[in-house]
Image (cartoon, rainbow, N blue to C red):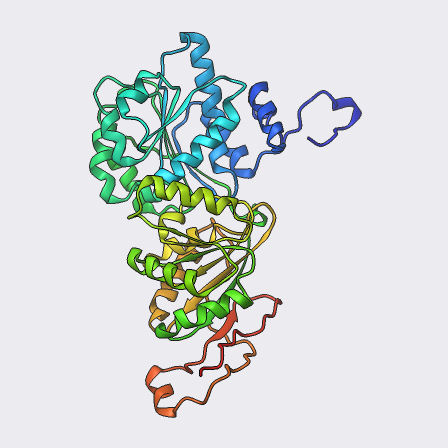
Length: 437
């Protein structure tokens, strides 16, 4: 906390966790984590949470949304325990889209709650059933939509429900689970909190439909905090059939440091992983997709976190909420099917004051998708990205013979891979493919 003038030395700074009314135990835990000043989304949402409000919280990727709800939630649960006695939980359920994110959220809570002696348990993995978890009487349960039915037994009334990554949890495929859960939540003081980096009007309509509540308060961090995310975008133009052949050279020229290669389909991810693991030496590669069992996914994430310059080939299972310290770049080997997923993918980098790099393999068939992604970027306040543009930079031609004019005309573009980028002053050499034998 910054030093104040002498006559106000004993008063908390307006931009401090003390001024937000948090308990000393939580402030001590934050200090141990070297978190001294609240972010804008935390400053706005913590008072609303402590006031008992239900609301939507919209904050860009990397601005501390987890702490924005974890801190006031822990404080209110501790106050309730002091009134009712220990062992009356669970008081809160946090719903996230994936088991991997649930595990990460549990770790964040445990780092904050050790002074308060609160119990946080995951539900939905392979370790324990709902009955076993509930018998422990934890204060907070972190789960996925598919496991909500095991909590909807008509007896367990939660005081707090937090929906994180709300734009994905509010997907129509989870409608039945959410409606079945919320119809049984009759706590008179029920608070429902939604957090997301991107949120459209239809998500808010679904929230009302699924919860049966008209939640009108909408809190966002706005554009004033865009310095939190620093991402440089680079587009690499090529043909679909050239992606795999170009990847080893991309790794050599641009892929230094820890990175993620995003690919749309699970089978394609497996094939690409096997290909690059056998052809690119001197780097650690990992694979993550939804067909892996929970144990294998957990092991892959743990190993990737520990690797100083590892690369994970992943589907969008890794795009939501997961944070990897030291992650330097992401490559969209395939542009995502849904434009909003682009924001979540590239939002994995550029955190903690570091400049991240986002690369996109762009093929002629991607033009319509680029337009949708640009619209998604324009419509969101969450992430300050350069638009995907095909304005050419100076390009060094690849080391290969000329293509025929017929082939160039047929493709509608020069078939050579080119590196381009949006606005900015950083220049990079074009990727060169190895001379073909």
